[in-house]
Length: 182
Image (tube, rainbow, N blue to C red; front, side):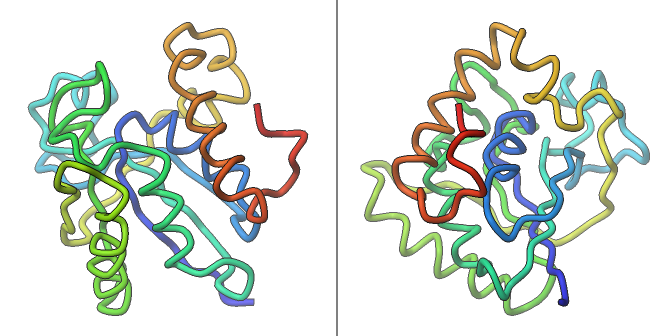
């Protein structure tokens, strides 16, 4: 089984990570930083908005179980790709909607997914397709955040369950276990 990787930025990485952890064919999801100009950025530096990085996730998936197109469709359905440099109350380029393709096929699929998804949005999709650049894993306490601290964090409690509800409603056949979806 040859695994593939998708690198996606859809606002807060805690929220995006929580969505993809429940998807069949996904073996691993890591939060991190990509697309900036500072080596080894910290969460504090990225949140300051001066490093150029986006909060993003790296999704490892089995293409024999779930396609990259399906990963992208889930991505577009579970965040607002029409908000420029923000997701809800999270404002700044670090919260931009972006796709970082790993090869030309992923880039073509990303362009097609934007066109396909536009029908679901009144406002234009502003998701960028950016060159793959250095990936920096977020600090350990950010990994699997929803499964631990996140379920006690008021921000996460207000933002993540609606995303999981969208996932459950629109992609029920793509979930690992209905019982794990809040």
